[in-house]
Amino acid sequence: MTAPLRRATAPSARRIRLLAAVAAATSAALLAAGCSGGSSDGKGASDGRPDAKAAPGVSAPGTPGGAPGGSTPPPAGQTSGTPAAPPMTAPPSPTGAPQAFSTVLTAAGRPIQLTTLHGPKSDVTMKVWMWTPPEYDDPKYAGTRFPVLYLLPGGEGNGYNTWTDNAQLGLQDSIAAMSKAGTSHPFILVMPSMQLAKSVETECSDIPGQPKVGTWLTEDVRDMVLANFRANPDPKAWGIMGASSGGFCAAKFALQRPDRFSVGVPIGGYFIPDSKLWGGKTPAWEANNPSLLAGKGESSAKILMVVGGAEPEEQRVARNFLPLVKAPATIEQWNNPGAKHLTKDFKKAVPTALEFLTKNLTGPTPKPTG
Image 1 (spheres, rainbow, N blue to C red):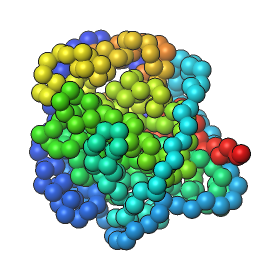
Image 2: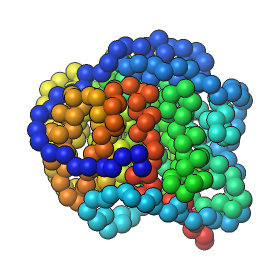
Image 3: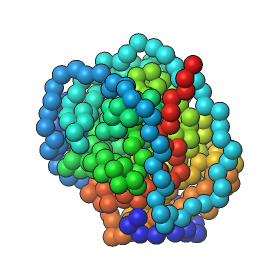
């Protein structure tokens, strides 16, 4: 851990109005390249282009073989909240035709795979990037199902992926190294687009009259992952992390969909929906408002709220949200020392976030037989 977690208190909230607008140009370049790049905050600063070697072609998601491995032990020195609620019954894994993936980059010795997914439940079509850890194709883990980490970008949230860009967050390198050291689970990374376009700011929700992006993210993408990868369907093996506006979505889904996610990590997020597409404080707006969901007591999610140490506005928003979260959900705050609302500073929170996720999520488990 890089610094201790601590709790905070007190009121006052406003949405974090993000920094400068570089993502439009960045995401356009990434779309042209067919790979990741840009800032995780579509309205914030960009920290460069991918330095991983391109490897065009088509690949399948990985092949099984060997015996199962065990869970990674939880990291030492981590603080925790109240005891977890009883385990939830996991929905069955769906079956279906294999999804076509192209390998757009190779990073940490593993392919970063891209697919364009049309969701049968949502009728939404967007891109999804996938990465499996080194253990995935290790014969010792052949009969193993892996935990899943959803990763959501900020800003526009469409057409680019900063999470596996080595010039930006390079999350796969952190997972590969920390998994080897026993401080992180070997997560399957799921990196979906977050919205169709900048002008269609649906905030990861099914806004009446708008594309059903919430359904695409929580149903269609999940079904695709379970049908194509050895992912554990139990929500106790699924975490979600997002930066900036993706942080809003991470908090929302952790509280709104305990049947999908049991741990949420919002980094520099906000907690009241403010898209103009809502048309006011409608019932749908209320149903997708983390600040209202937090007090319902319907989720046992564990939330780690990462706050920029050099961002007074983020700190005010966090102080307002933290006391709203009611049991059985729990929340902890980690102040990222000296951090601003920038991708390069979000990256500093990665080790702390992965340790928290690992402590609170089920690790690799044997696949049931029969």
